[in-house]
Length: 415
Image 1 (cartoon, rainbow, N blue to C red):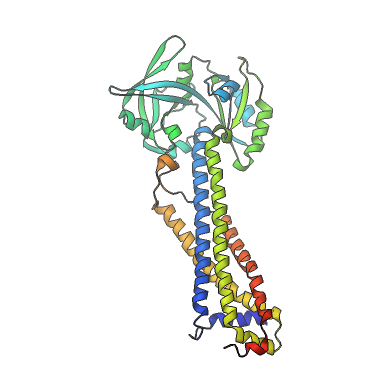
Image 2 (cartoon, rainbow, N blue to C red):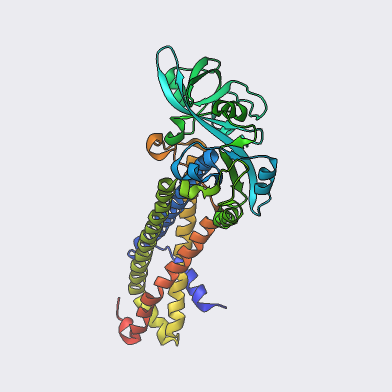
């Protein structure tokens, strides 16, 4: 029989009302662990939700890696490169690449009878993965993305639609500046999307690749470049190195020089902000562990002092200091376990409430999302629980040595 565990269980279940001091201390320690764990779970789930939601939005518009003309990537110019079938197959066969799609850009102006707005028209081929943009489609339908036929349909953002007072099915004139002339097109609004990413929603319109290539006066096998999606974002740097070794400083048949750029370098400010969230989480975790540890140490010291007479009795009966220390550590484990159970219920419960109801709203112009995003990451939650238990028990080892300083002869008269 495990004597320390048996005694600790009996002490923990002792609820006869005679222990007027330890019960409040136990409740405070339990509450400290519960609140600390709940805050840690909520913080990690919210930060993971923020990072992945915003990262996926940025990637949805720009992919993981972009292969384009060197000058275009460096100076955001609109310059064509050859993106024929052989080039697309070469890019798609690089290890770690999941998907490759062509794109072309053209700056223009959308004009109605009362207003006008500068936009960036982005054309996509039939290989375009529409999963992302379809998730943020508010009205209408997506245009037919093709490199063979122009549809004269465009997808605009909610911001552009409200600015120009456009609705699904409306027709709008678009003007594009050429080398020596102005080209006019009349498009039909086939759908309206909203992502709350101001950088894109304010200017970006989607249409088929053929339309944009014709507006630029390019050959049918030319485009601005290719957008590459990798299988695993955590291995983005490895795939980017392979991509760079394969395409950088090579030339196409028209004399353009290929280059590649990953999404983290394309939008450094956004990803730097997301990285700062990790620092915030570590600070919160450290503070909450400190709070839980402090309340547990205080509670354990109060309990040891209150049980001085019992400690003296056990020592007079031959119990070793080690046995008594283990008894109080087991007692602390019971308190920590109860606090962790309550903390998990509160933390996971609030995360589920936010996930399914979107109760807490945000300003999308500041945070890029209109509600607080939550991602329930089971491995992260399990790791937080294990770390909380281990750290809480470890910080209690030093206070438990107080029992070795209690003299049995004096402790019998303590009360």
